[in-house]
Length: 259
Image (spheres, rainbow, N blue to C red):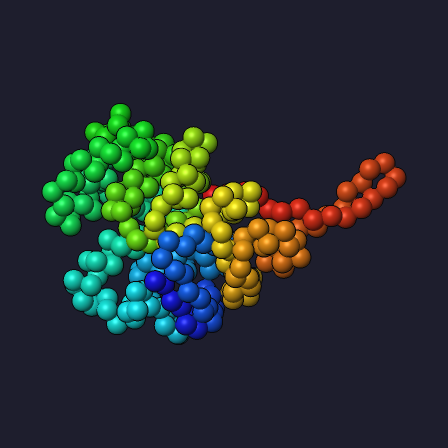
């Protein structure tokens, strides 16, 4: 479904955000994307969403070279429904006057006759019913994140790209999201700094190294057990512990959400 062949992206007059990425993601596959800050995770997700195009290599979706098809309105319309991105900061996604309009925006644009029924369903799923007539920008950070989630899940996409989705969410909603992703037929690529959640979010793990290349592609549990790999990717560190007169050094995994 998703294919990258030697893909790279760089802003003008800047180093590559990532380089020489080659991978395949199949239908229904659940993939966790790990890497230290600045390793290119968010940029990669934007490229997979078609907001950016490779400066080298090729990105194909369902066999189609994405950059060559972005000028075709019918193809883009289908792609935007099937491949959706949850931004790290939900404010980047919210622009409608009410929560109801925000969630309904995609289905209305697509001309779906059941748009309002879909809004009711996803508002109930994410406990947003009391907020439907409120302005999105008046909400708390966690509420904004839930509205942003509802606005993409309502499209029933084939590919879900999620950038730090658990940031700002309350524990109940995090649990709901994990269950939803595990039961979804969609392909999922989810980036997170929360290593304790990684094994719940997917079976396959991609790690972007600090050299902005693919450092690992394999089972998530094997990656989390490899402290040397995590340390090389700046996802774990070693420091000294003192206990009275004795001293030893051991590794710690980084387990936090970026702000």
